[in-house]
Image (cartoon, rainbow, N blue to C red; front, top):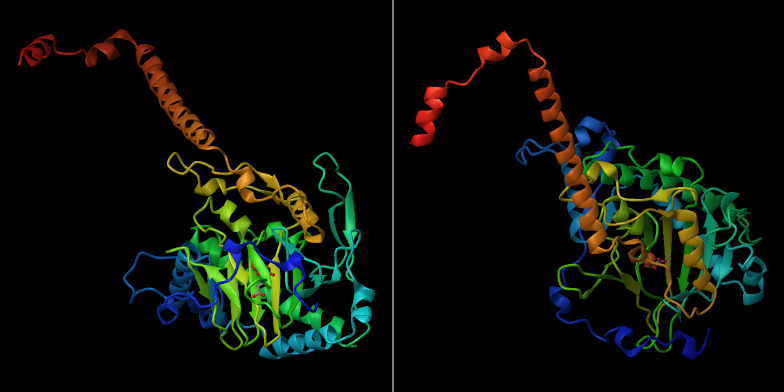
Length: 420
Ligand SMILES: O=C(O)CCC(=O)C(=O)O
Ligand SMILES: [Fe+2]
């Protein structure tokens, strides 16, 4: 990547601002200290409580902090997260060594339409090319995914990681790192489940049986025209959660919910950045929304980042949690299959598409459908009530006459009552 090819140029309204407004006043995503987790994850301790702050245990406070961050920002940073710091340093080191290799070496492990894993430098976000190169690998090697995005096609395909020869420790470091971050991802998902009033393991089964999670090594080279291009264009992550490591250069920006402005995520050494993806948005029926973010580049420094995309198994049907639904909170989405969704999304990573990329809003139930499902629920409740009353009436009329006469109404008092 040398000069700026037109494929990288963002539409005028999507180009980064040279200077953010009120940069000194910028409100950033919260930072959450996870050290309470290292004292064990007892479910009872982790439940959110209504008690006064002084009564709230460290764990319950944590659940509450996570819930607030998910609701108000969709993004937060975590410190004291339990992932060995050494592993973070090691993976950054092998990533640097790999991306320094000549192009023809990197292209030996290039991904293509058949094998979606490995090296790639032509990714598009919303049909504009990103100023970056990446290396992708699966957390669980040999993972089955749908062979195509075609709805009727049931065929599966097994994806296999490909690994470069150099640096020699690349594969081992990547796999060790993925296992450690996966543990953190499960803990965070548990905290999110608890913050929604669900059991800590509520979501675990969706991942235990062949998750499709992916780790990506991102390299953003210095860009001669950082005002025209983006490292990653504005997008939302499609999975359940993303656990991202970034170096000290900075460039990630989050669309702040309170005012829609782009807010930078200032690097905190050894912290991870967590964001809620589209799947948590659907599970929580819009309580926790997946938030738009982008990466700005600069003309001087290269940048490295490593997202861990926590993705369920391909067969998982994603839909709002029944336990959260009620008359006042009817389902906002119809269910969709994760594997097909992801296969459809990936089509446009390779080349420009003429149509809009698949998004969860395509599964949103129209207002009327949402209202209808609310009135169906309300009607069901009314019907049940009517059936209960009818059953009681039947029982009463079946009683012997003298029993019924015991509760005969007093005609005189009724008459007087109706006169008054
Ligand atoms: O590099 C970053 O900071 C974020 C990258 C990102 O958003 C993504 O790969 O989905
Ligand atoms: Fe992202």
